[in-house]
Length: 371
Image (cartoon, rainbow, N blue to C red):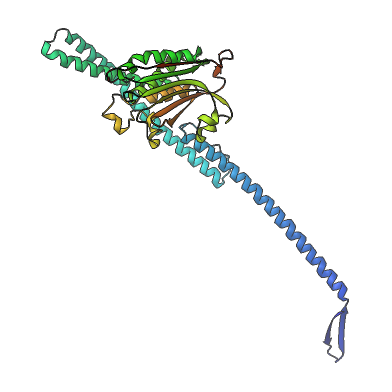
């Protein structure tokens, strides 16, 4: 028993006793209730914490994915958000406001260059025409100077025309029309156009093409591929080589991890590769070369150009929903343009046929003109 004794006022002793088993049963009952309540509370808390963490992590993953898309160059990407007043939703709203401001400033910079090109093209054309008229009646002493001025005016007009063309392509106002074409024949035409340039510089052209069909704008692709090949020949020293190949490769063998999110890593891509044995591009500058007017310091004084060739390539590639990758060629640079399935189709009849030709030329060194 469990008992308690006390003395009453009249001097008598009062003893109250209870069965010890009953007390233990009561204690076990209370402890059991507390333990079960603790288990239920911890379980519910753990489940609530798990779902809250999962929802928070999922929201963060969505935000990170959107930020990666913006970092890849798509400034139109925006973060989705709810009307709740949570901190994460407020962060998404603030990031969207920041992206709106960045996009506005970037478009402003592009608009300034486009407006300058548009406004100056007309007076430059007029100046060039006046110089051409004056060339016919100027003295022999001034003829060389006038011709140099005409050449400089032509270069400036070409720069402005390139700026305006890039702007039209980026805005989807190029007036282009995508039609079915044979990509291997287009690449062959570009190579044939640059054979004399390679011959003058003593550069070997190697060609390896698979038959591929593509729905695209022929003129824009021709210009983009011509710019790529022109750069490859320009920066390849005498006695060097340039490889032009067209084949299919798995996405995970071509694209870096940052671009694999845009396609299935096992998807077969049609890849155009132009690899040279020149000086290459420093890895930290590979994203910069697609900016307008950007040129590496070591090429400014050695090669002609205005820094718009690869900007036009990037605009054309983006217009065709393709991907462009720059890689080391040890030595030199390898430029790869990958077209997704649905855009390009490897001919079943010619899938195993490759046209491999080697064009070897030896001539005096000559500087090619930038496209």
